[in-house]
Length: 396
Image (cartoon, rainbow, N blue to C red; front, side, top):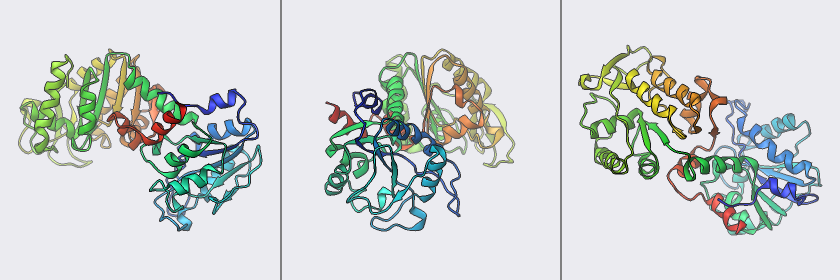
């Protein structure tokens, strides 16, 4: 992927005195009182802002927050708490501007935060008129919001068409470099872990990966559907019976390529889905009609851990069991630690995956942790991300 980078513009001295518009992802969780409960995205936005300020630019930053109605700014949709947290992180005041589309006054070396961009009429529909107005505010547009890269909106796509220069910020660039390394130019064997409750929500990802990976490890309800495709009984476990044929097709497709979808040889079962349920390890042939499969068994976990130890690249999306309940988390723990110990380049993404990374304390042992959510999944599917596509077009 070829695109201009903010870091290159800085090193070339192209930002001094220039107006820089940064689209960040500052959409952080808040409690009922409006207090920020987790500020990872704000902290992740600081390098781009600091880079532009230190280069002598006049810096404008905006983001969405929550799900506001266009044309209406409710108190709960305001970026005021974000402005306060940014000022703490940067050690300087961060003024918050409303009604900014028709003009912004900011001097070189100064910073302003522009109120919630999704309150502007036309933002979600990627209005050309709105995008052109915003492009007039800046000399350089910077997209540093990978989490919104799969959406074509006025601040993620439209403005990039019309701004004099359009580039990627350090966070967006790092995401694309990591994903490109994992999927476009992987060191092999390439192993993907795709887990979750439903095949249907990740079927297109599985089909795409089936053409690329050497081992496709499935977990959760997805694994149950693949077990049915392999002719095994799964009791009353969660599965999608109408997609068994699709799962069988993926197994056969990979087999023809000399690749594999490892099917569990043992599982952890319970009679009920509950934090208090008793966990029982069973060989897959011994699963009873009233059993719920809630994790992979120790033999399966050990088998998969060996594959991960030999991998060159690992892509991880989803825990392989109900890891929130400790008695059904052993499979996910074993695989998490195997990924952490593997010499492979690893990339992990998705909310449940990041929760597992945190639970098993392996954050600093993952090659790259993607916070992109939907954008991460769409990249895995092989879809074009509109916000990235426009940056590539502008670079050419």
